[in-house]
Amino acid sequence: MGPTARKVALDILCGGEKGAFRASPFQGKSFRALSPEDRALCEELVMGTWRWRNVLDSVIASWSRYPLERLETRVREALRLGVYQMLFTRIPAPAAVSATVDAVGKARPQNALVNAVLRRVAEHTGHLEMPPIEDLESYIEVRFSHPRWMVRRFIDAFGERGALELASFDQGVPSVTLRANVLRTTRDTLLDLLRKAGVQARPGRHLDISVEVTKAGPVTDLPGYRDGFFSVQDEGAMAVSLAVDPQPGEAVWDACAAPGGKATHLAELMGDHGLVVATDKYEGGLGLLRESATRLGLESIRTIRLDVTDPETVAAQIEGPFDRVLVDAPCTGLGVLRRRADLRWRRREEDVSAMVDIQRKILNAVAPLVKPGGVLVYSTCTLTDEENQGVFSEFLRNHPDFSPSDPRPLLPPSMFEDRNSFGVGRSRSVIPGTVVLLPHVHGTDGFFIARVVRCH
Image (cartoon, rainbow, N blue to C red):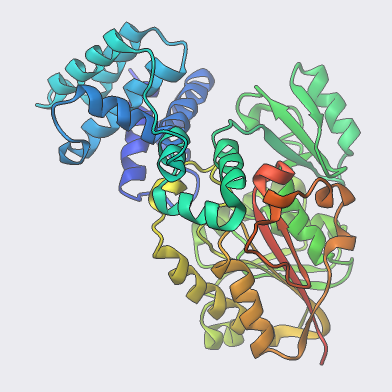
């Protein structure tokens, strides 16, 4: 008998609590061994438990004699998993209790505690007490399940209304966005193919190469996947490659390329003519990139394992100069909390300064390899001023041979409509050469995109 969806979900939740995975949590052998239906259930249970964790914890605290922090990891995550099923799914409470208790393992001495607490919750589910909205930090922290330090930053950057809008947006279940591979199909042809197969598909919000699908099941089972007709990528991420604006025949470097969404997009924009050098520190991510390139029929991508924070290593292994360089930098990821709900619990505020140090090193290492007249694009999928405007402003001060270049003419006009007072943020100034995409304003993942041209 294979693993159950709840046991695999519980294993993933425990792994996330221990910081056991760097990219997608749904890549393990146990998850892949599940049936398609159980994989979908497992994903819903994991993401939902992360997405509503503070609500779940407040309920558990009402019916457990023991503080959550005193419980072992597997017991704590099992309680969250069980309560999530009772509050946010149509799974009958008795089934949620028994299946979750079974997933814990009968040999565990705290199994009885899980059973007892979940049964108390099942008997008393109903109205949930929330902090008063007048105490806005506490209200958002619990009601929308964000760590307090993130809430404070959202309020400071976007105001009270903007923080509420952003935190609420993060709680939504995102649709899957596809990027049509224009070397093999068109967006309209892909839409027609998906709809004929019974998939709920519609054009993307901003770009004429994007398709949104809902209730699609595993992406790998969608028609056209094996034929390389599309990649999975958010429109915000697509905008980054459009800002690079690579041309056929050019030499382009994607410095932090894994798992490859932007590198393959760059190659497609170039008509697969030219060279895309894709580097990354992690070989596993480069392996995923190579698999994607093969599936999409792209031959212009060359992968190199490389730590781009070290200028000497970069100079020794990378032959430049390049017409265009993309630094889609490692970051805290606060712009993708809708898709990666686990990040809100794995990140700490001190990670911001650590990321800034990495981002600064990468930019300093790659800048010499941009040819005169060439383009450098710096992007992140986070929302902190330090990692975005701060890093970019410092780069401009220290590299007077680079000048800002407005990326907006390269992006669809719809990305700059409907900007309101709480969208940009009351304390945030817009630096020339930059674009900020905000989840609650643009309906995309959050992205900071900065573009510069090397003058000499």
